[in-house]
Amino acid sequence: MFVRSSLLPALALLGPLLLAGCRQDKDPQPDPCAAAQANPLSFRFLENYGTPTPDTAYAKQDITFEGPGAPYTSYEWRVGNDARVFTDRQFSLYFYEKDAGDYRVRLIARRPPNTKCFPNDDGVDTLTKVLSLVPRSFRKGPIYGKFQGSTTDAPRDTFTIRIFQGLDPYNVGSPIQYDFLRNLSRGCQSPYFTLGLTWRAIQFNYGRNDFSCLTESGIGYLTTRDSIRVDYSQFENDRSLKRINRVFRGKRVR
Image 1 (cartoon, rainbow, N blue to C red):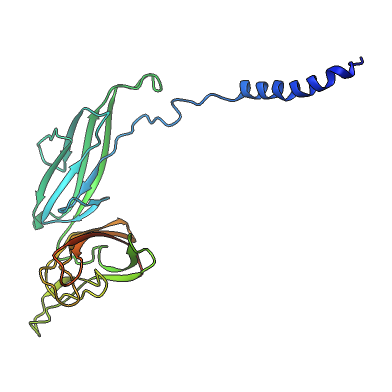
Image 2: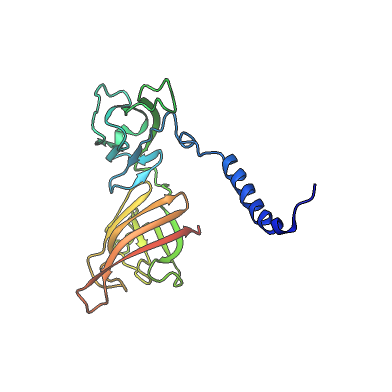
């Protein structure tokens, strides 16, 4: 069959449009259930300073148990052999040094059923984790170490901070070990024992402007096994009463 030449330009334009329409009709529609989970329940453990820890913490501190928010509407917690049932989304328990050990933590939480994606869903989810509490005498928490990084306001100005144990510089001969944070901010070498420490976190408040320190105060915690974030404030300089906020992010180098 022959096509008149006057129709050829129109057909040439129409062809791509027809092909595009066919391709569009054949594109699969997104599945609204693709990202849905039959049991999306999660919860986490928080140490003294409100910092998260996946599964291990020191004893002799408050541990907070934190469940998820919406769509969950009710909670039933059981911790170890404790006969009590805790029904708040978040609550805290104090563990003494003698309480070191493993604790099975179970959460049963309720939410509106998702029967559109899971026909047999009853809206009741259960999750169990084990929390290991370590005695304070076990001084090998992952928070100790050297971390190289920078503050978010000066990302190219890298330096290394150190979290470690050492002897009292004012009581020579004493066998007592204390926890130290050095070089935050850069050059700060305060020997004072104002560092609180948990398994994965530190809290500090240097009370004097000396030893190249600017009265730093803040909280640091491990975001992964080998990454640290420290949120702190300090005086602008050694003559100022204005405080500035900074965030240090670093990677473990030892």
